[in-house]
Length: 284
Image 1 (cartoon, rainbow, N blue to C red):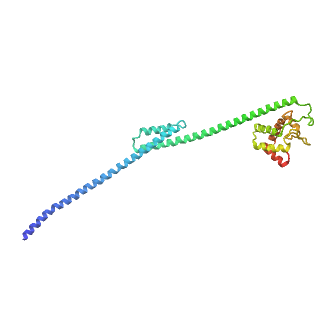
Image 2 (image 1 turned 90 degrees about the horizontal axis):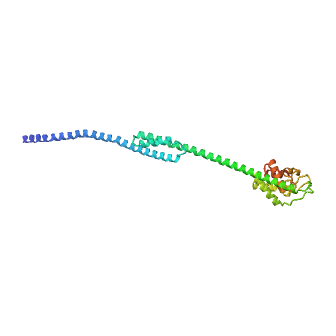
Image 3 (image 1 turned 90 degrees about the vertical axis):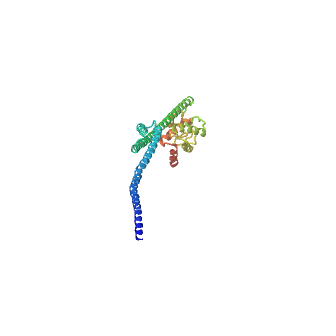
C-alpha cells in the first residue's frame, strides 16, 4: 500500500513539471512581445502627426495661392505686381515641398496680398482727391466764365441803352423838364431781378430784400425825388451820381438800377445787408 502511494506521488510530480515550464514560457513570450507592440504604437504616432501637418500646410498654401491670384486680378493696373507674381510662382512651383517651406511661402504670399491692397487703397484715395480738385476747378472756371459773360451782356445792354437815350433825349437837364418814361414798378423789379442774378449772383432771398429796400425808398419810381436831392429808384444822393451808369439816368430804369446795384454791392455787399442798415437807421 505504501509503495503504491509513493508511486502515485512520483507520477503526479512528473506530470506537474511540464505545466510549470509552459507558464514560464508564456511569461517570457509576453515580456518580449509587449515592448515590441508598444514600440510599434509609438512609432506610428510621429507618422500620423507628420501627415496631419502636411495636410494643413498644403491647405494653407492652396488658400494663399487662390487669394494671391484673385488679388492680382483685382489690383492689376493700380499696383506693382512684382512681389505678388513672385509669390504666386513660388507657391505653384513648390506645392509638393515640406510643411515648413510651404508655410513660409504662404506667409510671403499673404504679405504680398496685404501690400498690394494697401497700395491700391492709396491709389484710389489719390484718384478721388484728384477728381475732386478737377471738379472744383471746372466749377470755378464755369462760374468765372458765366460772370464774365453776364458782365459783358450787361455792359453791351447799358451801352445800347445809353446810345438810344442820347439819340432821343431832350436838351433840358433839369428834373422839372425831364420827360417821364412810364415804367411800372413790376417792370422795374423784373429788370432788377435779372441784373442782380446775372451781374452779382444774388438769388431770390437777396432780391426780396432789394424789393423791400426800394419800395421804402422810392416805390420803384424812376422819377421819385425828395427835398435833399435824392432821385430815382435807388434814391441816389445827389441823383447826378447815376450819370456814371449812363447819360439817361434821369428816366431810364435800367441805368438807375445798374447804378443802384453797384452802389449796394460796393457799400454793403448785398441787398439784405443794405436793407438791414436801412431798417436800423432809416437810410442806406
